[in-house]
Length: 246
Ligand code: GLP
Image (cartoon, rainbow, N blue to C red; front, top):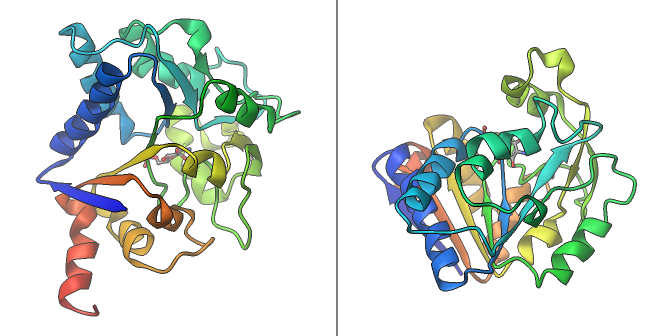
């Protein structure tokens, strides 16, 4: 079942997503979380850090698995998702370094990441953003999608969308390692957050359109326990769709 919550603005939507993560950690201190990067998540991680500061949540016993990482970067490289996570979340909470996992950036045995997730007990909650082209993690639109963690060639539009992490576009790696669609959808619950008017079109295609590998996020419709958190701008395509073509 997919539930959709719409908030008046992006910061209230981010707060709701942060509270959801925090509540998961309260009810299950040893929770296994799947975590994304992306600009949408920056305010979410800020809110989680604020909740931690007020003693409302702890990562001490949790384990986290990031959805993806650029191929060939070292964990300490400025543009890596590992650096992003440290800056925006891990350094601001009580995360135990060995309990924060990332796909191996050498991409040699990507499937081993799925085994690590299974050994940890599987993900209780996977937090998700959505790319402008409908990607989840780095599962790019294609005729076929991969089930397990795999190496991906990034589309030019995705490299442009990630250029903010690097000094210029040429430095954005061309390849990455990403959890696969089954890796993500095997999480016991998923929370997808999208904010801003530029996501309205893709949110509509993902949530109200047909299931298609051309919009990987559309597969979230099949998840038994999915929560979608939107601000009004990102939801505007859904609401418009209801009064006109649907
Ligand atoms: C990146 C990440 C995704 C994320 C997406 C959206 O490419 N690999 O996991 O959901 O971008 O990013 P943003 O929030 O910046 O729009």
